[in-house]
Structure formats: structure tokens, C-alpha cells
Length: 99
Image (tube, rainbow, N blue to C red):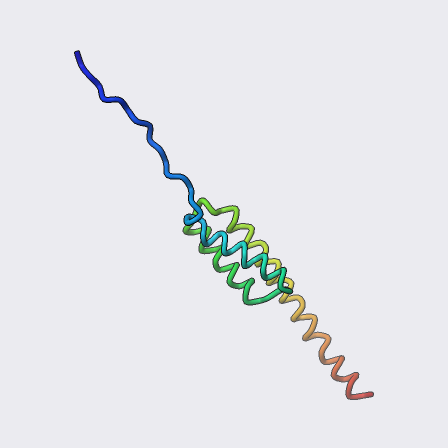
């Protein structure tokens, strides 16, 4: 008679928040950049952290993508606002000189 050892199921470790730190920070910086009035520094930080999270933390993919999108929207808005300001400023300066 042969005896076999009972098999134990293989468990994968549960996903902890430590596995998603960069993704969470990317999302927080992306939201903060919009909430604080299109802050350029927070947007760049959120974009960098989101890209790093995509490469290093596969469990935080959704958080990273959301952080990248919110940071990208903020960067685009900031760049558009800067271009409009640079285009309008000379006309405001000329109008101030003529009055």
C-alpha cells in the first residue's frame, strides 16, 4: 500500500497597498494638480510616478493610468494657458503704453 502526502493548495500572496505605492501617489499628485489650480510641479510629478508605476507595479495599472491621464490634462491645460498668456501679453502691454 502506498501512502501519499496530502497536498496543500498553493496560495498567492494578497495584494497589499505596498505593492501599489507609486500608483497611489501618481493618482494623488494628478488630482492635486487639478484641485490646486493646475499646478505644473504636481502634474510633472504625477506623470513621472505614473510611468514608473506602470513599469514596476503591474497590480497598480488602473491607478497609474488614471494618474497619467489627470497629470496629462493638467499639463495640457497649463501649456495652453501659458501660450494664451504669451500671445495676449504684448497687446496688453501696448494698450497700457498708449493710454
